[in-house]
Amino acid sequence: MRVLSDNHMHTEYSSDGRGHAVGSIRDIVESARNVGLREIIISDHGPGHSLYGIKRKKLKEIRNEIDILNEEYDDINILMGMESNVMSYRGIIDLDFDEIQMLDRLSVGFHYGIIPKDLRTFFIFLVLNPISKVFKPLKKYVIKESTDALIKIVEDYPIDIITHPGSKVELDIERLSRVCELHGTALEINSHHSRLDIDSIKLAMKSEVKFSFGSDAHRPGRVGDLDNAVKRAIECKLPKDRIINIIDTKEKEH
Image 1 (cartoon, rainbow, N blue to C red):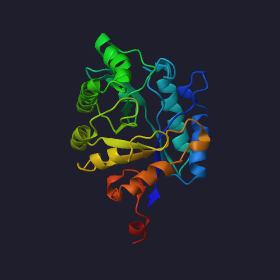
Image 2 (image 1 turned 120 degrees about the vertical axis):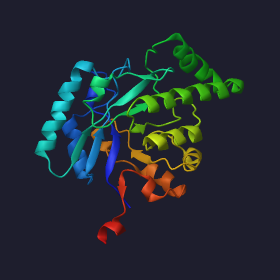
Image 3 (image 1 turned 30 degrees about the vertical axis):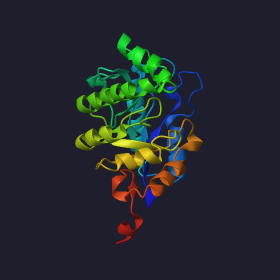
Image 4 (image 1 turned 180 degrees about the vertical axis):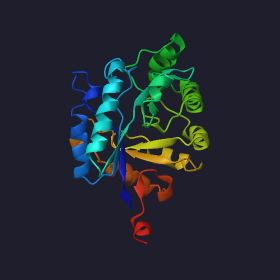
């Protein structure tokens, strides 16, 4: 088994001078080539993140920069992605469809640092969610509402990957995975975050949903650092054909 691509990484565009992520797109590309990757997805934070989201006016600049680099390098495929944010429990993200058309891949995840679009989302995600971690009677409600929100997004948007599912808010992974299977959306095994964890992977494996490895690198030196994700997949005996960014080296030889 060989990892073909790293499907989640950030550049200095995710920082806006705040130091959250460092390195230019070119820096990321050079690092990826050095570790033998054939493809990467640049997945900077969507504009709805109040601290680290990219500026909308930068979208065309990023698109142009990636197009130029793809012409320069013939040994790696550079895809423009975006790690969009859940902005509303009504199933709304922080990109409109014209902006989505500029992307090669679209990811989505829950993140703190957003300003929710409505009071209900604010109350569930930023108030009830933290309380539910210590006051268990609320947990079932928060899980259902959060899972419903992601399902609505998967049904309404062309989502390729759900990033670190369960990391910021608990989710019904088994129910979510069945919907993702139907829509061709992969669940990320994030090498930086603990989710998907072992138990969650096993629950998701009950469906035929695909999985994606992502380093969630915020600096060039971490690009391709997928060991934690790979170890979890191996421990769960996750079939290789369920992972979208690996190749079977034995099959390739034949």
